[in-house]
Image (cartoon, rainbow, N blue to C red):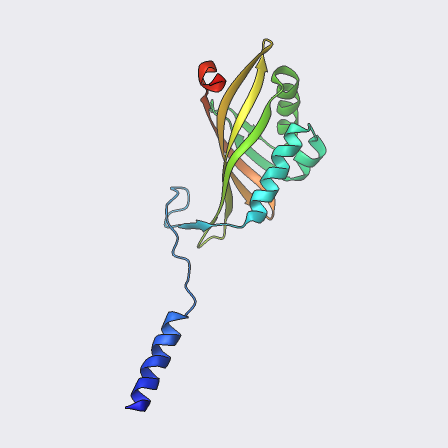
Amino acid sequence: MKKLFILIFAVTFTACNAPVEPQGAGFFTGAPGEKYVVGSDDITDAWVKFIDAHNERDMETILSMETDEIAIVGPDGSRVNGKEMHEQRLNEWFASEDPKWEMYWALPYAGVSDNSTWIVAGHTMTLTIDGEEVKANSMIDAEFVDGKINRFFVYNMAIPATASEE
């Protein structure tokens, strides 16, 4: 009886402490069958640095954090392909609307099977258009490849002036 008890205890203890493989959740039609789990805050830190570099107009840091093939899809469907185009568009935007971002949340996530690394982050974006401040909530979903930002998608929602003043 004592041996049976020890055997049951050993099996139960081992089963309860077995490493758990991440199962993941969600889907992306671009990666059929892939599931996602929470990623590393190293990605969050990198994204914060990237946004800070935008706010500081530090083009050298921005470009150093991107792959050469950076691809961006804006909220209006416009596309930016490559560092050179990104630098040109950013310089024009910085001069015309003086965008500033304030992050209010971020969630890094990773693909279970393909080891892809992503972050989805929310920002309040302030633009100056014709001398007036305009605010929007900006959601950005970004993919990292080898520690650099490879592509991202931007989704904006206007914030009515009365809502931002309350």
